Length: 241
Image (cartoon, rainbow, N blue to C red; front, side):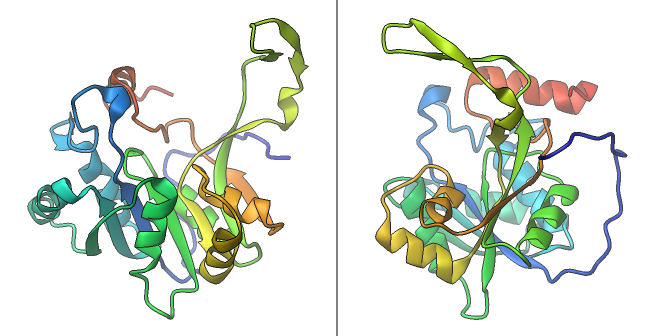
């Protein structure tokens, strides 16, 4: 069981891990944001994707960044990387028809020596080194890893007509975040045998591999709707959460 515990705002982690590459997936349609591309929306004066990429650019635990985006956004992403001096980006490539295929496009750009990789949502701009470190550390002993946060609300189960059938024990329920880490060969092997998943480590779970959950951060939100932009601004301006 993962236990929430107080932690310092800034924690210096030991440098006892080898840096890993990260695939940043930013190829979605942003359909729930309306006609606006959430990746290039301004947040505190910078595009959302710039915040995300800069977090990995500054992290000592990241060796390189593979950015997967829509074909029509490639030139824009190149411009953002140049403007904000994001030098760890080794590739900016077109994604696939959905997240699962976009991740595989990113994996195809890894070097043969890259045995493990992190996979992160481009629209999660508040990723931090504590989570990155814990994910990479867990990959030493497990086939996959993901950060999670505990479910705090009461969870109800209802049928298709909205009739409540019961209350789910929330003690065993967690909300998944990214980055999610995978052993590359095992992930690709599992992906060949299984269907598409919206969650990267689900591919490994379904194939029977061991996946470790580590403590995430409530501030590590994914920007999906206009309301999320308001929350993100509050996090920046007022330290919300």
